[in-house]
Image (cartoon, rainbow, N blue to C red; front, side, top):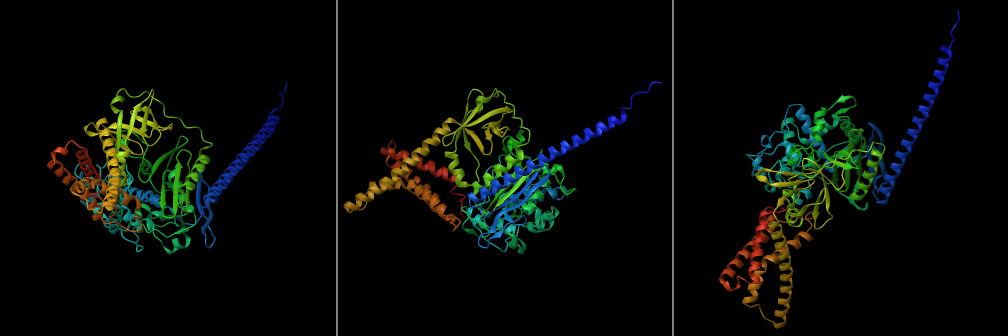
Amino acid sequence: MKHLPQTSSSNRKYFLIGATLALLMFSIVNKADENRDSQRLKHLIDQIDAIRTNYNVPAVGLSIVKNNTIVWEGSLGVSDRERDVKADKSTTYRVGSITKTFTALAILKLQEERKLMLSDPIRRYLQESNLDNPWAMESPITLANLLEHTAGLPDIGTAEFAHEDSSPISISDGLAFNGEYHKVMWKPGLHSSYSNLGAGIAALAIEQVAGLSFDDYLNSILLPGLGMDDSSTLLTNSIRNSLAKGYSSNGQREIAYWHVILRPFGSLNSSPRDMSKLLLLLVNRGWLNNRKIFSTSSIERMETPKTTLASKAGLKYGYGLGNYQTEHRGFLFHGHGGTASGYLARFDYHIKSKSGYATMINSSNSSALREINYIIKDYLVDDLSKPVVAKDMALPAEINEYLGFYQPITSRSRVALFLQSILGIKKIERNSKALNFISVFSSPELLTHVGQNHYRSNEKFLANAILLKGKNSIIYFQNEQNYKKISSLSFYFKMSILALTLIFIVYSFIYFLGLMAKLSYLRKWPDKIQIQNLVLLLPFYSTLGLIFVLIVHSPYKQSISSYFFEAFGIVILTSSIINLLILFKNKNQILSIKSLQVFVGLVLSYHLFTSTLISQPIWS
């Protein structure tokens, strides 16, 4: 019988040799990858430290999570320049508005415990009439509106920002401090416009259903539940000992601790070690250290805007619950930024790669933070597959009705809204394949259609803007700002009034100087005609005075009484009415330049009051 060759042992031998070589090659490649990653990380940290040094930032607190692993956690620089104290991973920094993320997490936790709902109207927790909401019956403000900045509220006033009370002041007292001016400016549930007031009001719901103060709930329940033992909304002895001192933008002048009047919007102190835990919680969709802290649906709700016109029309980009979206090289990041006197902070994370970062600096230098954040995001996405650009589509068939002029209709500041409603008007024009969003004061913004009247602007990868119709066929454009379409007649009327107002302000100034010089030379008092001319120009003198006050006044040093602003409004309105009566008395002047002065003065008075610059003063 012929025997077959004995190959099994030799095959096994070759297999083992091959497997060993493969394992060795894999180990070598893996080691090379680890070395490359280590070198890239070291280069990144060196770059960050160079930026810190270049901008004279005393310290940078930093946490970097990549592929669900903390790859760097600590601080660069010193927390105290005078004593040369080295900062580390347990050094705490003020993180400002990142506090809103935790206020939102507190609401979501209580919702999971069925103690409240995001859809709850706030009248369950306070008298909504205190907010003077003209739309209270048809559009009550909900907790979701407060956290998504869609309650129709402007921001708090500078008197509130400047308020100092280390006691600390209660949330209720903080809201009552300037409560007479907490007015709903536009219908809730239409537009997102950033307001620190919303987080303060939402905190009242937390206090009522939890049976604890806001600070006690966060500092004894929420933060310890996340293992964030370095963090607190209060200046405790522990925080006082670990807190990096805050400095001015040049890194030289020390800035005193800012006792925030409404702590739910910006009082949190935290460390790189603690911010790592927040990042891991979010990239793991509510899980932390193998424990389910939040449901995945709560985290997803936090990241998703749902209460604006844009979100209801399907646009996913925008501000969620203490969490908003940004795009970096086509990659979608979620996160939040924060500012406190002497500090800046930001965290961002990319869901699919389970990567993110948190940066905190003890300086008010925004350029430094921006450069640091940019290179960290570069590091996190460099080895990811290039994202897919939203597919370009032909413009909608009905696009012509959306072309024209658009006026800003929301703003954090009442002064800004007054100015933007005139100076911020833009125009949407059609080019061959896309739209141009044109401003007099900036370069055109390209809007590329990606379907359903959704647009991506300036070569972004994702849709971040929308054209839509609201009730009564009002057309809106929403991106990071909110605009309403106006007629061409309205635009040219506003521009004409603006031009004439500026002309008359300049003319009134020149006339007054010339008249005073003439009368001084002749040593005479003004005659009846000259007095009448001065009265005709009084609305413009008053406007000039108001502009001067707004420019030179520092509201953080002292507050201006509301009566001061009301006095300006009364002078402008009263003098305009007097001028109208004078005009009717002297009918031969009706077709003169003086009638134009009277008309512009009346329009100016109307605009000042209806824009609430006068009727709701910015400082009180």
